[in-house]
Image 1 (cartoon, one colour):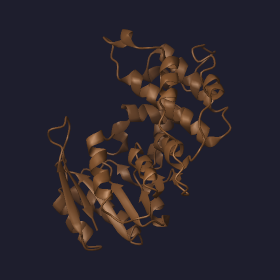
Image 2 (cartoon, rainbow, N blue to C red):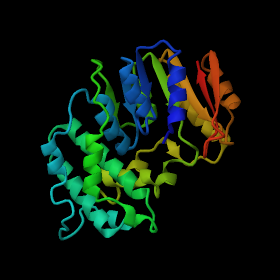
Image 3 (cartoon, one colour):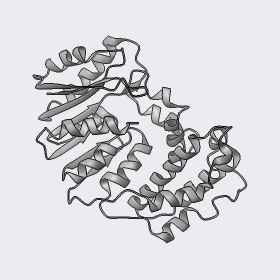
Image 4 (tube, rainbow, N blue to C red):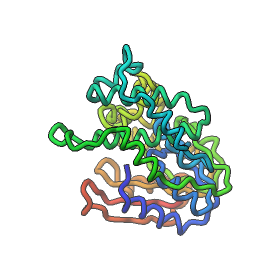
Length: 303
């Protein structure tokens, strides 16, 4: 997930590009997507993972729905009361028993919310509770607040639901399929790392996908949708070939902005040479994030 400085860098580059609509095929945590609504842009947000899709439905597609106090009460109803068995048994393997019951019951309660954007907001706040749980370890667990209290705090502090009077959309498609049918002035792409989606199984991302799908096999379902990007790639040539096939499907989009953090696998120069086989590169922006923990030199190539 992006830190604020990285997000600010992306926004500063996009501010220099003229566009009214934008397609984002690898949305992840859709913070950029949400900010662009405030600029009056029409946003088409996509991600293969359902946790990202539901978050985008809450923040990007949603124009006016909010969670009311009675909705929150419905989500948290009997959240800590154990039932005969967990509906999603994988939760007991991913977290403590009481936490597993809380998330299992909350997931069941969210299914009772009829309006999809309100349901999306409930998922979004529950993801925040999951992040909260995963921020503690065995030594610090006693400092935690009750999870229902954390959910209520996140709800009270929730981001503004922005109606920019545009037909913003969020989809849950494989990226190449999405970009092939997207109609926008600009594509902003941040290609997945070569380790692939499978490397996220034991991370917070993996937990989110298993929980939001409501199935122990939830992460495997996401992996089954992978047809190109998202697989583990060990060959530089194979990785560039996947990018090339993706860009072939994006040729109808007038402008591209492609973000690339140099992690030692391929360089920005190599990516730029590939892009030039499709269209001229207009400008390449560079930012050094090496002083940030885990930071890399990051480039945005505009073509």
